[in-house]
Amino acid sequence: MNIQLIRKYWRTILIVAEMNIRQQMTDGFVLFTVLFQPIIIALLGLWMLKDKGPDAAIFVVVGSGLTGLWSSLLFISGNSINFERWTGTLESLVAIPTPFEVIVFGKNLANVTQSLLSMVLGYFVAAFAFGYPMEIQQPWLFIPSVILAVIAFISFGLIIAPIFVMNPGVRAWQNAMEFPIYVMCGFLFPIALLPGWTNPISYLLPPYWAAVALHGTSNGGASLNETLFAWGMMLLFSLIDLLIASRLFAHMLYKARADATLGME
Amino acid sequence: MNAIEVSHLRRVFSSQIGVIKRTTREVVAVDDVSFEIQEGELFGLLGPNGAGKTTTVKMLTTLLIPTLGSASVKGFDVVARADEVRKRIGFIFGGERGLYWRLSGIDNLRYFASLYSVDPDVTKKRIPYLLEMVGLNGRGDEKVQGYSRGMKQRLHVARTLLHDPDVLFLDEPTLGLDPVGARDFRTVILNLQSEKKTILLTTHYMFEADALCDRIAVINHGRIIALDTPGGLKSHVRDLNVVEVETFGVPESVLGKLRALPFADSLSVEEQGQKQMLLIQTSRGAEAVPDVMSALDGVKIGRVIVREPTLEDAYVRLVDGAA
Image (cartoon, rainbow over all chains, first blue to last red; front, side):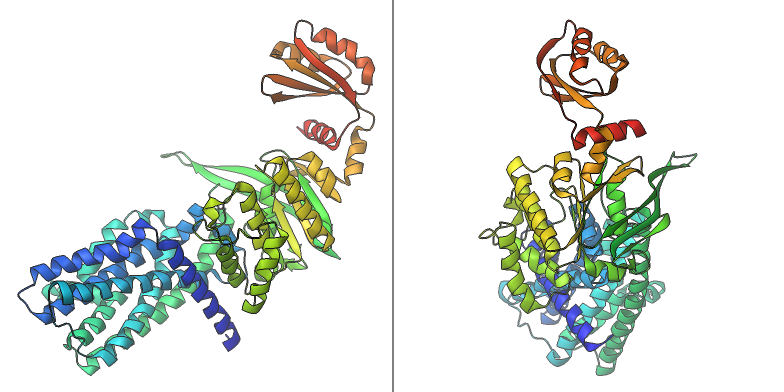
């Protein structure tokens, strides 16, 4: 892939993301999923741990932000292709020269970026409503952790969407998949509190490594090596997800064209 | 050179029915369809609902994979070289869907221009040009959800022309438009034709096909039953005249009597609110009127006229004959 093509696709991704954010700004479901639900979780967590000090507060803020990232990925990105079919725009997006996965990448970028707002809002709630001296302990490691977490979440979303399209039965379990990931990935409390046999499952989930990096760099609890390892795992999983996604998208689109399921009629 | 070549195209839809004992049901939507469209030609595809028009267009626009046969657009196979075909085509499917209603008209165009990889500098000039061309000047900043059906259709045209495609597929583009909107839309199509675009148009409106198309293929039950110029198709009914009778509350038994008349080549009934317009194709012309009137004895009758056949009459004869 040459540089010119990457620049062209990047420009498309940014426009897709911009248009998605514009459309979703007034969507009640999106606002609840990416903003209000994480804030409610943050308020409850901060209230329950109000005697535990600022370290617990920053853990709750980052953790509640991660719940927003996962929920938006699961519900909004996961349904992004089906949404286009429901609105009758899927055919217009398939019969064009831009690869469909580039478009879904842009949509996921919009969803994940919006979800980060919930982390920022949670930060202000903890700082002003609860009066905690909120401080990111390792800011220069936290920022790359956020960027890598965004990439890991977007890439993970690229395999969820086609799986949901090709397997309506899996999509029926969507609601049931929300909370277990909060727990298994250590968003709201460390996985050390879970039974040991569940830990290997957590290690296979890209959001877990995002949680390790973001929690560790925000509260200063992670060594440089631990953070670097989490970054490496996020990059590795992103790469694997992108490779799987390219195959899934090709298969999904061929199947949709063969089975005539692109339109709703 | 041909812009579009279709050879023995066939598309079968399969669906499973039953819960315990599942059986597969197959419907042949397009069956052994072949035709060519020359560069710059405006080609019409006519047929009743479910005849296979949209399925054919969807195969040509790379949205469906043919079960058998092959098709190419600008020399590229629609399955093997779908990516090359997509760069060269634009398409409109009738109806209001396919746009982002929460975005403005301009934002919709910006979005699709980026998806078609139109250079940003070109996009800036092209969007105002297209909005003016389709008559949406000054309305581009409004959200699409506030547009009328006609405005949405016109925005579809602008969208499909963003990357200046050589070949256009217009699938029932005037469906549901008011008469003025449909007329304006036909003007847009004629303008596109004057720009040497190759256009495949499907429509239910015979006068539209008659006025616009260079050649027309009539498709029924998935098969092409006639392919000719509008004049050539009309020659199928040159030996006939049409007796039009306006009736009010004509019973089925009387329609049976009319169909049984030996000189009645075909009979169609158009429901028009309280009245029914009976269209009887016959080679006897005005001489058939007395026998028609006696068959209609006891039925309230309005005006009666005898006229030359139109493309619609030719279409009715072809479709009825193939049924």
